[in-house]
Amino acid sequence: MDIQNQLTDQKRKVDFNTYDISVKELISMVADGIIDIAPDYQRQFRWKEDRQSTLVESVFLGIPVPSLYMAANGDGSWELIDGVQRLSSIISFAGSTEAREKTGLSNILKLISLEKLTTFNNLTNAQLPKTIQLEFLLKPLKITTLSDKSDLLVRFDLFERLNTGGVALSNQEIRGCVYRGKFNNFLKDLSLNESFKNVVKLTKGQEADATREEFVLRFFAFLYKYQSFDHSVVEFLNTYMADASKNFNYKEGLKIFETTFSQLCALPNGITYNRTTTPTNLFEGVAVGAALAIMKKKQINTQDLSWLNDEEFRKSTTGATNTKKKVAYRIEYSRDKFLLNNK
Image (spheres, rainbow, N blue to C red):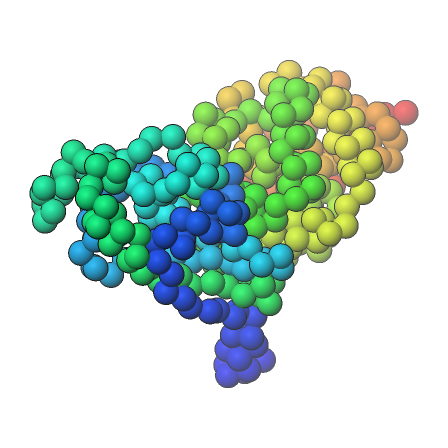
């Protein structure tokens, strides 16, 4: 594909519309559920009161505020892609009770540290004159929406590129926003499985950023599709989650997941090298290898685990190991070792 054709092809996948919408309309759209902030996204609201106040002051003064980016859904609703800090600040200041409930905001913003509108300091919106309140509500904000003609992989890419405000979402948190539905809920439910939690050791930070859900996704993606893995893990997982969201055997998936991690509980230190955390590549090899062995013989050999320290296996799970060859090696090596001497 030549340069121009590639540019044209990629541009066709992205379709935007732009709007100027008043603060009042924006708040109403949130309250009515027309604009949706995904639960996984809401909890990333991190701006302090002084920064929220500065944003409100900018709106009052007509200083340009960066666009809010939305993605249009097939049912006519919009989903927030970028701007959770700005939109939440506006609702915290001037939002209705309904809008606050929809965004999970309980505190009402009292303006502080304003350098231009100093007489507004220590006041809430309700304490301002009605004419000033109305002036704020009628201020226009720029909204850019990604059309529902754009596919979900494009939507993930936009989340990733625009996800810059506050605390950045992890790739799995973005997937949780983009691929909401039965399969995403299934991943969340399995991430709480006690056997899985005993086997997979994560840091406190990883427990908070959906890494555990991503490990469940990795388990199924590599179990069913590892032979088609190329080199980009993010793209591989995105594609698998998009496909699984449309077509997945939940009964079969639940059974192999529960059986695999129930048997892996026999590993004295879980899936680890250092007894504290589970490396991603080691997890893929051991967990998927065990599942493949179970699918073949129902029971795996967990008596002899000395192979976990074999030099070649270690090489396939440490360093730059996300190649097609090394992914296949660590999974199939684990599978064969779990089957060894297993009658």
